[in-house]
Image (cartoon, rainbow over all chains, first blue to last red; front, side):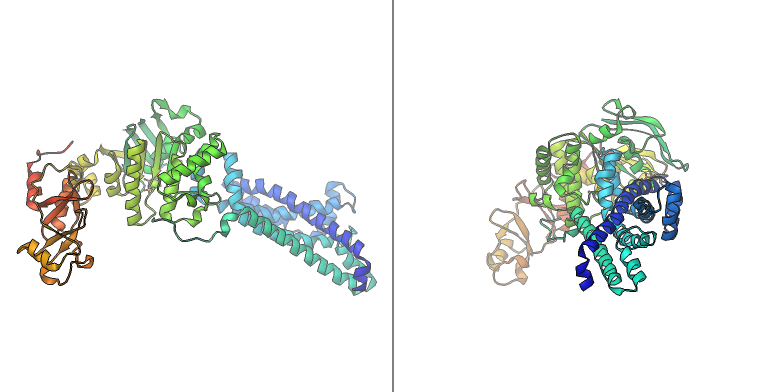
Length: 219
Length: 367
Ligand SMILES: Nc1ncnc2c1ncn2[C@@H]1O[C@H](COP(=O)(O)OP(=O)(O)OP(=O)(O)O)[C@@H](O)[C@H]1O
Ligand SMILES: [Mg+2]
């Protein structure tokens, strides 16, 4: 506790770093997964290779990916960009299937009604399909957010500062306080992200929170 | 007017869904496409607004070949109603109805105002506009579907089994309201159903299709019942065709009998006196609206609502022969009750008199 209070500013900056490293890939990954998920739905032939291919990406061990990144990107080993790109790959891996499933959850007759009313394809996607896919996509996003928070800490092994640094630090000095604080801070961050996504998803889907009141008139 | 000229649709798998269909849906009338499952009804309907492109042949709306029009613009001018509504679950009822007006670039205020008026028109309370579709009953959703299709006042409406997902009572109600609405609006409607009774009830003309999308007969409901083109049509129409056909024959002047009546709440003794030896007496309210038949012999006290025999149907004067005959057949006293447009009693009629009127009709098929 004393250690915690004495190092508040340092912990705060590590937390911020951690949050940024987890969040940017989440957002970029989502933005990439939406068109890919759409492609997977739109063209049946692409569905299996896209889903299987992106799913395979998730099986690459994170440490290996972090180390491979500088070779692929030509970045320095300490460049946070390595972490961002690697995590974006994981996020895409998790979300392509989610987005495809989310778009697939939109009832066919709703799509047909939209087409029949003369709603163009682009407008239909953003105005009908995407909003209706929000519940499914946000569920996947929550998993990706929590997973990102946990994977970011692995980057401490490469010396990129974030909450994982507290683990390596505590381990090196055989001192348990930073490790405990690091774990708790990670959990708090993951929980906060999870709650915000849940909150945003609820705000975007008011129609799901409607209970059916008594029927107003006959039939 | 919508005209199909030799329209064929062959799906990629090789299924001929529609085979050389030629047919005209006249302006301001309801044309019903009816036939067994898979006979190409939906395919035919969707070729009109180009949700499906014909393999060959042309479809014209008021003389304009739809193939030359922009599909989205074409569709905004055609109302489309499908089974179970197809409402947008994430938009309020009002916004659902305002969809096409907004697409057409109307202001938000005007679109919403038109939407609110339409909700009222299809018999929905204005406060329902703020709800989401999952907060409505199936029948209400179906009405919203109709309101949404009408929102931009399109001259043409396409309806694909719009009433088949609701229970029979609500369906009948929706059908009646649909006919009332159409009497006001006079849209050019193509209506798809697999229910021949619905086709006969709603259609100005009925097109019977068989599998392969081949038109077997196009005729008015009365003509269809009286003169089916072949066994397929006859089987599809089912039983009681003669009786059902009477629904389309206006009753001529029938020999009405004066019916002695007793007011609800009168002493049973009055009823017995008025019945004068007859077993049944007709009970009416102050406005002379018939309420039901009572049997004074078995009653005591005053004539109460729960004493009334409810079996008898009531026919409107100038209504169909079927209604008049049914009134006589269903009445416990064998006297069919006839009322005027306000619902007041005008007299009773016997089955034999209705049958005599039926016999007097010219022989052969009606027009
Ligand atoms: N997209 C499609 N691809 C291939 N075949 C199709 C397709 N859509 C419909 N069909 C086939 O075309 C035929 C006509 O189908 P359609 O949906 O027009 O029938 P329908 O009369 O509306 O039937 P129902 O009463 O069951 O709705 C059927 O044999 C159907 O299997
Ligand atoms: Mg169909």
